[in-house]
Image (tube, rainbow, N blue to C red; front, side, top):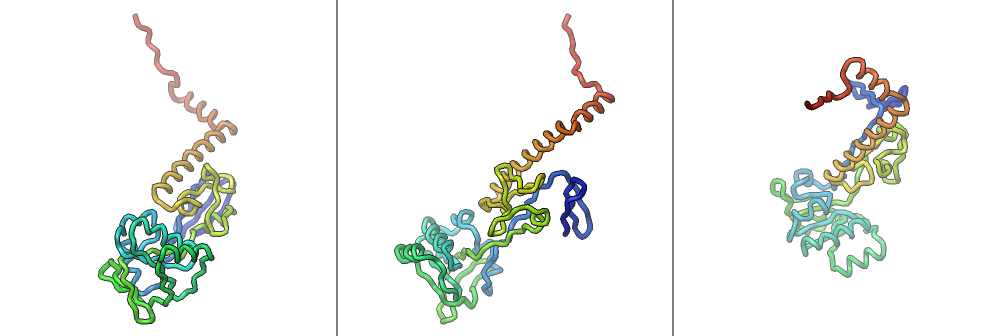
Length: 245
């Protein structure tokens, strides 16, 4: 995959094709990093999730574990209490990195924390059942959420020189325009809440902005005038008017 700006046009090349355009909308998305636990892959999207806002309702009154060791992990665990009373945190052998306040919350809300390394996830089909710890214990879990992080697919945006933030998200304004003239981005590769309906909405905002941008350019460069003259040369451009009587 290659990305260049040539003669006022964006050019994106794949292994087999080349595409050129005056405006470009990137919706390249992200990759959620799953836990490196034997047996988890089979459960992805069924009993192993990445977003509490998207899938919290699916785990109501189930035993839920939150995988991670940062402040975000604690906040995920506390937010999950709205769906189920049985919530725990598993750090998979890592020392917790949350700050003092988040540690106080863990104690205040009595959320169990298991710091032992997870050797495997026992599951039946796509349904996770237990996390096996290296000390021999097995924690009953019906759903697992991870806060391990994301990888933003921003390579094309960066190749064009678009600005990204410290996490890798492509920076955009309220029209979804990037720092590069004519280049737009929408969806999870931007600082948006990562939900499909929001990504689709951002895409619609960007599409309207692109249409407006192209329209204004056609006025400034007189392209619309040339189009109008071509129309007038080959077609009747005034409506038929009939006089009654």
